[in-house]
Image 1 (cartoon, helix red, strand yellow):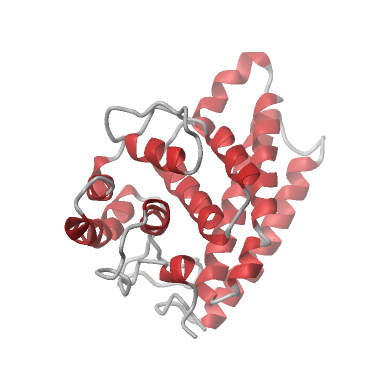
Image 2 (image 1 turned 60 degrees about the horizontal axis):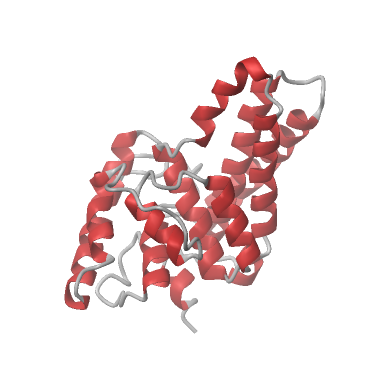
Length: 254
C-alpha cells in the first residue's frame, strides 16, 4: 500500500530501479583506484550515501515492509563509513576540503535526521546509533540536533545555545519542552511551514504542486516523527498530516 499518496507506484518503482543502478555504478567508480582523484572519491562517496538514504525514503513511500527497511540500515552505515575513509585519505594539503562534507549544512541536517529517524523508529541497536552519532559529530552546533542526540544516548553531549536553522525548526524545538496541550499545535505549525522553507532552500527534498516528474522519493518530514518517537509526544493532532510519516511511529494500519 502506497504511503506517499501523491506518487504513483510505477513512478516509485522506476525511481528505485534507476537510482539503485546509478548508486551501484557510482560506487564502482569510486572504489577503482585509477578512476577519480581524491576529491572526486569524496564527492562520489557522499553521493552514494545520499542516494542510499533516498532509496530508503522511496521504499518507505512505496509501502515496502518496515522490517525490510530495517535491513537497509547496515548498508547506510557502511556508506557513511566509506565517506569518512575517503575524507581521511585526502592529501594533507587538501584536508580543508573535507569541511564542506562534515559541517551540518541544510542538506546534511535533513539527511542525518532522516537516518536517525529510520534508526530510532525501526529499532536499530545502540551500537548503530552510537556510531551514527559519532560519524555525524557537530556536537554543540545546533540545540535541536543536540537534544535529539542526547535522547538517543549521547548523554555527555554539549547543547548549543540556539538553532542553526530557526526557520522552519523553531516550533519543533519549542515543542520539546512545551506543555502537552501545546506540543501538538507547535508540531502542526512546524509541519505546515516545512515544505515551503525546504523548497526555498533549493535542496530538492520537497516538490511543489506545479512540479512534474516522477524522479522524487516522496515528500516527508521525518524530523517530526523522530521527535515524537524520542520525546513521547502525542501525535493525534497531526497524525494525518500528509508530510508526517506516521507508519514509522505506529506501523501501518491493519
